[in-house]
Length: 336
Image (tube, rainbow, N blue to C red; front, side):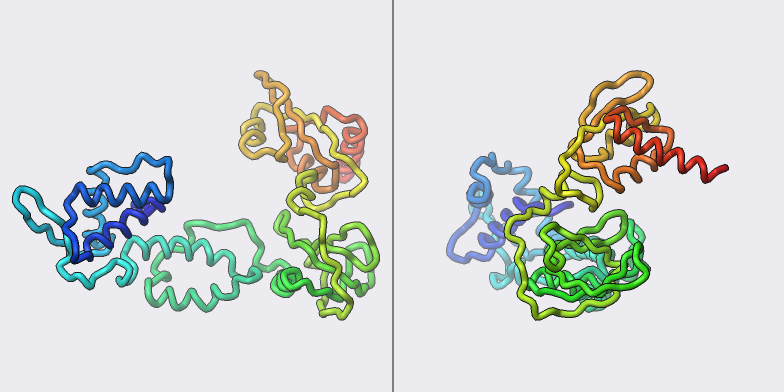
């Protein structure tokens, strides 16, 4: 039984009624008070009926609830409800079995974030929760995320996260794949992004006006710098990434409408997992699926389209189609 926000409101309202010695609460009184509490949260709600109220009381009396010591006291033909022990409250009880199960499920998800910035507390919390709720007896193979635990550069996540949070200028020792030597860069960090199982740091580098991104696996060393931090006053990163797939972006370029065709076999995958938020259907036939996306062409887009192999065709624009054709021709040469 899932505990919703409305259910919590009802349980709290009932708990207050059951431990109130100054008034007798009959079933109609309980129903009215629960609906008043719900209306305060959601004025448009139609409230609950008696059946739901009885179900709530049954749940609160169960071991999955709080095992409340509720007595039903006859008053003529009616009866009112009250705790046997008026000092009892569901807020004073240890978490129940259902809450424990929900906590276990939540912790199984959180375990997947170990090593991420600001999640170091999980390493300390898990043993305590494990001892209390025996988490180790639960299989933690129910859910998994696509991540590489051995990825170089993840050790920089926490210091970079904190540098962004506290607006600290950094001196980064960096060596790109294109260079044989490393370089020291004064960097004003603004944003961390994960793409294709790799992490990238975005910010302002030295005196360059344009945004720069650095791959974390190419960072050799990070030190704090005394140079005054240049704040990001205008760039919205949600908007920044709207026009691209991946992380590579040329500021001067504008989004291009790219028309594509997918085979009938690929069609359901493209529909259920769009290539980009701008994806729109052009036409659907028995042979295939025509659609478009509007993005700034970049290396990541090229790699994504190549990954579909012969199942996708680039229809327009001509210059992008030609560039992709040249890449495929070079790929074919590798099989000679």
